[in-house]
Amino acid sequence: MSGFASLLNQFKETTQAATAGGSGNNSSKRSRSSFESSSQNNYEQPTQKSKIRHPPPTPTPPTVTYCYPSSVPVKTIYIACPANTETGGPEALHQLCHMLNTGGYYYDAEVSNNTDDNTRDEFGRLITNNHNQVDLKGKQQKLKAYMLYLRERSTGKKSSVEQVFGDSRRSPRPTKYNKYNAPMADHRFPSQQPTSSLSGSSEYSSDLVIWPECWTHLIDSLQSQQQKYQIAIWWLSVNNNKGRFTQDQFTMRKDILHLVQSAYAREYVKSKLSFGDSQTRRDMKEDMRQQQNHVLTLTEFIPYTSSEFALPSIPIATKAANPTTTVGADDNKESKSNLVVYNPAKGMHFTDEIIRRACGKHAKTESDGSVSGGGIRFCPIGKGPAGRERMTGEEVVGLLKKAKVYIDFGPHPGMDRLPREAALAECVVITNREGAANYDQDVPLPVAFKFGEFNVDKIFSLIKECCIKHEEYAKQMNEYKSWILGQRVQMNTCVDEMVNYIVEKRADSSK
Image (tube, rainbow, N blue to C red):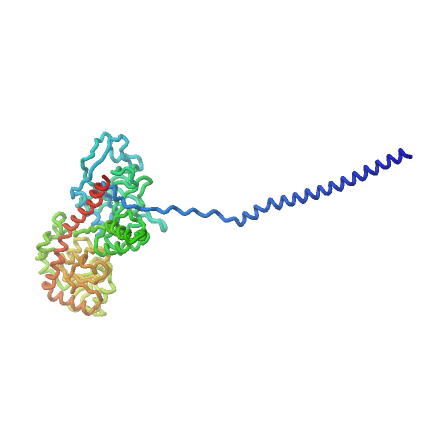
């Protein structure tokens, strides 16, 4: 019995141990399930956070600082010009190129005999071969200027330019500008390799590109990844810029040389230049002085007032001392009639009111746009229906020679050409005081011929008097004509000062 009891007790103990083990496995399973659930929750937590994670902030681009290239003398000048365009602006650009090339301007040469100093364009074509060139330090080379004919391309809100080259069929230069010593840049600009300068480590090359004010949004469009070309803006007008050169650019772009054709443009540019970087009053005065030094006067002239460009069809005196002998003066006394001419491209609201006052509301308009009444004929400077087609320069002068009065009550964006040509053709010039016409330095007419307020009765009364007593009133234009005839010499002085500023003074400062 005792043996049986002993076996029975062992069986009970084994059964209890098995039961206890099973209970431990369940606990283990629950614990593992709980861990897995906890692990799953811990794994999903980062996913939940990633849904609200903010992207890293975009780094602010570094502020570009523009410095004036005061230590880099200019050696080559490129004048940006719209291809195949004949207006007053492009003619002035060709005049500048001519005067730079004929003025006898030089710079101190410093060229090494480096065998790798060849200049090539972006296609690898050789532009200049400086191999075996001797050291020219201490000698001088001629400053050269080239016309850079460009065509603007617009894609949406973006604009770019492409350089235009001539071929056997067509040249980008109008034939009327062949009289100027203004060679076309026949190589791709800028070249692949930077041009040398007296300051080899400078970020600027010795190339200067002069841009007309209508293209200020394109001044950086030709920049290369290497040395930058220098930039100048010629403000031939103010209004034609249409605000493309913003106030921020005036403030930031301290690398730019501003050339102004008129006193109106000079005041506009100087009023826009900002000196906000100055910390003290003394710094502001110094900054202002430096900025104003970067504004230079650069005028232009009526080409046929110079014996160099006189035309057989437009005989004109070239001496300012004798302003009474101007465009066909002898012929004008016989051929002039009671004709009043005007520019149909501007100020027509005021011109139409003058015509209605002179000719009546129901006066008939002829096919050429002219209107007659009260013994006076008003005619637009143009041809075709309503005078909307552009005339050639010779045709404009021919019409002015027949007129007694020229009126201009539109905007004067710069020192306009038509009032000057009209005075030279023995017309009495009458204007408003808008834009450049408000400055006697730009339109130096006697006070009686410039109206600050539009008074149609007073204006018509003066026009009628000028037609009746034309010879008497025309004499009052003599000082104005003398001033016009002196603009060729004045431009020469302006170019001298510009070259001195961008070449000679910089050469001295780099030594």
